[in-house]
Image (tube, rainbow, N blue to C red; front, side):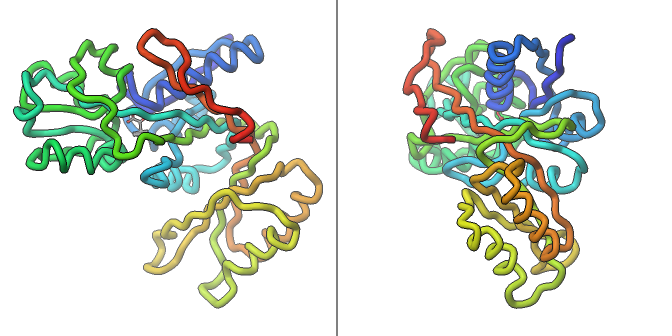
Length: 298
Ligand SMILES: O=C(O)C(=O)Cc1ccccc1
């Protein structure tokens, strides 16, 4: 039987490219076949997995230029029982798609806020007067570009091919080394791996409320690979902390660290342990370019 993999749509998003790479990896590793299904937002993608409507979901969590995808963090905290199965690192090269005869005729640029932010310097230089319109996904406005030749959109080269749209410039991201980390989540327990993700709220806003949880990892020489805060949404100045550690929660010494952590937190959510899979960039012929060294990531 085929598994269903939910991702942000419409077709041609970076999330779909990550889901496709995961689906191919899954077939290669386990023989398991899967079907991709698109959802209109990241929150709805994760909700579909939490409801059992989709077996797996692929969502962006962090970009190397712009940082966290807050919608993913907030939904992971809000929805119960989601477990990370795998992380995927996708190289991102943005293109400006438009039917305008000339770049200078573009008045409006549509894209996901992360993509607009990753290209802000290029936009300021080449299209300083264009109006920027945030969308739920990089591909959301692509269906309208043919009718409106004063509009452009920032999306992938793959999206340009799928929608048969001209690329006026590429790559347009301000820094060439642009990667997004995606998480593959499901309701199944995670199978273990090199990294563990968790989040917690602290019992009171007092000195040492964060230092104590961090000391649990420091004293065991467990390295943190990420720490982020998000508002609790209960009151101004109250935070949740999201932490990734370079360790497997199946290891007994990590289990004892997590048991101790529970004593110093109000609510603790452990999203599971997983490995990180780098996805190599592909050129226009679909061949691999810049193969990423696996050892760099796990
Ligand atoms: O909108 C998309 O294509 C997405 O997958 C979200 C996103 C946007 C920009 C960079 C990485 C992921």
